[in-house]
Image (cartoon, rainbow, N blue to C red; front, side):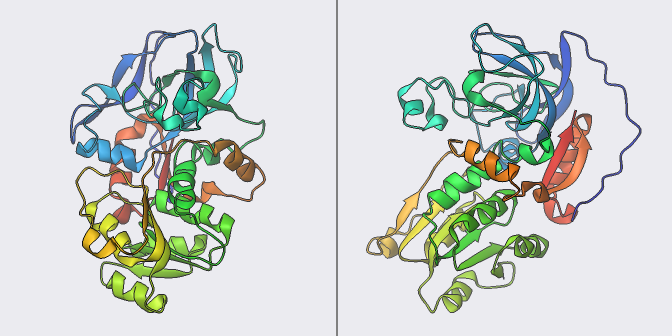
Length: 364
């Protein structure tokens, strides 16, 4: 499945103690690979991590389209990766220079009322801030606030490429899709969107043994990949009527759980059209436009609709399943680049259908 990207002769990237290279956002449709200052410790709870491997997320594409207006001109993008501790603040007790770490996409202080509820995404001094409200991971170095609660030690001998998938997409697909969708043994579920997040939901939904997993996408290649990952039925919405096809597959009832993994109005509305009475619609996608909620047809159907920003509370459990090979997220990786090829990597990931791309890995 992997596409081997031609690797031009390596170019020497000159950095000093004070500068580095990073992928920088300059407004919708405008990004650049440029020199930025190396981050420094700002608070005693900070750590500076030298990035070893990072990736590009669908959320980064939403940012590049202007769907996340909180991201301002000059921001270093990215919220996923693994790396090596370069420096720690005086209050960091769990990590030291040289430690290999997994970076969580969510920053958690561990002390505020939301963190104590396990709602790390709403941390009063954190949440999703990397590559959003502060500089992120598509760079040679990144500052991680609240390092003790926002990094995970990587066990010796681990496949660090696979672990990059634990920064965001696996806990996101699992928590926002599978857990919020209350997937249960024997259920019929539909996942709308067969990109990396949808595939992460597909992989982790199988923890709960649903009877049928219907994958819906206009890209036939991604659907065929989904079949190899465990999907039982495929619907290509570029030429099939999804609502009619789902009704055929479910004896007219609809699905028990519909997981939205794209982030556009049409896919959310589709989920509400194919759900069975008493079913659960779990939204994962990042939405930049309003969607119509058809209460005129849903009000009496006992439907539960959930939204969520990943909290990463399941990351330790998912790490164990990857370590034991029960979960194999590395098969989501299709392309590999050097970090200084970030602009090329964005072109590949942004043209996923043409390039047959799922996740790309950028290595520093």
